[in-house]
Amino acid sequence: MFSHVMLGADDLEASKTFYDAALGALGVRPGRVDPKGRPFYAHTGGLFMLTAPIDGQPASCGNGSTLGFAAETPEQADAFHKAGVENGGAAIEDPPGWREGLGMKLYLAYLRDPSGNKICAMCRG
Image (cartoon, rainbow, N blue to C red):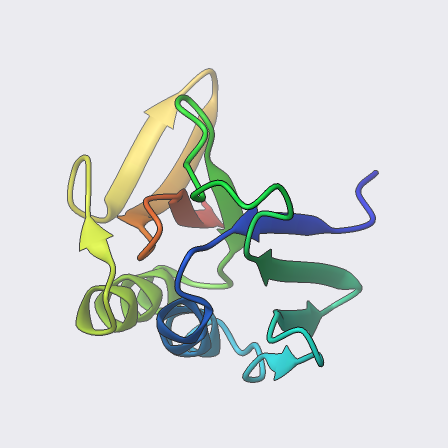
């Protein structure tokens, strides 16, 4: 359904450090930087990118928005969370763990990236 996801970031270097670590825990290679300084991550057919907003205004997070990354195991989601916190992110919501509802069992690990974007690693039970 989606071709790519792009998030705004004011400090692309700090964001790349954060995402290289957090996504690296999920098996994603470090981001490649284009001539404009924007990190690009490609993994299993998906494309994730970071950019300074083209309108010149500060980047802002979407209130109520979450970007989820697939984790293969709960341990991988935990590693994502730990790497993110150690590289400029902030732990938010409940600690990583299993959540159940609507007949689903999901392991979720939530973070805020250095720009305040809400992200999550999710493993299906």
